[in-house]
Length: 486
Image 1 (cartoon, one colour):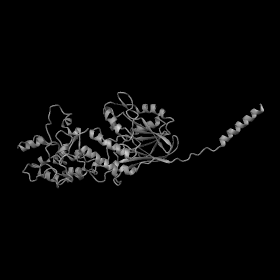
Image 2: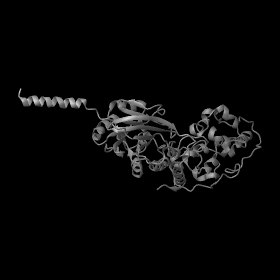
Image 3: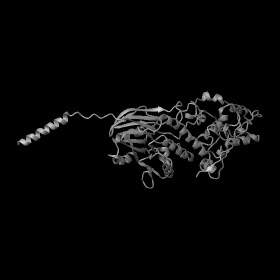
Image 4: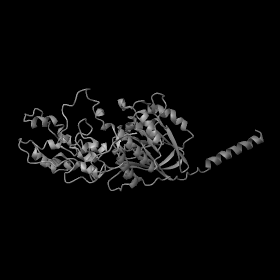
């Protein structure tokens, strides 16, 4: 062999040995980055206020999270809206403002948002101070995504892609008009290759159940973090599946998720902690977010809503057929049921509407249903009536149903042919459930309102005029001035 070939071989061997012996570089520990997660806020700007000890509310979440921080990522995984009614859409606008004040980076679209029409969602998107995401909720007419499919943000020099999807399999007929849902896997299979080289980390916001979240992690190794979702309960611990860290929360703004990790190199995470924290009543409420709740209630007080229109309330009825029975008001019941009236007057039911007035929630449809008689039905309480209505407070007909026919027959001396069905614990739990009640136990609560059948006799109890039980309600108003919504 020629000398120069021997020399080249020796150099190659030496170089290879040097590379083998060279110590591997040690990655410097990255700065911790915390991801803050909400999901299933369900319209809870504030705890409703009916009882002490209530959990949740964006007012408390704001205090928990603190001011916006460049070392954090704040996201919502979906279902922040309470429903599809007009007043719930108005409320969602204020919730979006709250997310903006809290420094959220993105809002994923969940099932309740997908119940809205394409036109309604475009309006919410146009006015949102925070980017709304969904890679697989499509405009049915064009097949194009209705929202941004992703958003790339910078955190401590790292490029982080936030991607949003929702599982459409359980939406069924609930999907809003003008919308279509693409399979999550198909949408991600098309999008994730486009993010290669553009993002150092990928965080997926997925409104999907536990099995769906895990399945996405198994399908797509590119996903560093998956935050959800449509789950039965918040995560008990941080889950590692394939190359993804998975954390989920739910429970109507009563729980929030935290995921803390070190970001050391592209797609190389060092998990530090992942947990879910309850938003309990010891956490002070942020005044700026509380002001948004006040602004919402003032706007709703003066806005004409669909629920204010009797014609809208009769849409599900047979055309031309009037209700056989209507609401008469508690004052009509006292004539023949004085002992029941006495029990009612001594209960909190008789002052239920005053509670709403105190919190300036007496025009909020979210609250009125459980504090009046028959709200949302053709003959029930109407918002414009206010404290002058005979249907304020939780009255006899709130539990027993409309009584006009019964009152009409008995007042004329006839025999009652209509009989009210028995009332049980299930009737109470229409309102006394979750955050709207202290832990409900029928046997414990019933003695406070106990009453039964009475032998007809001359009344010995008369009810005071509506709105004047125990004196006028604080800040009582004679009526709500309602203007058509522009």
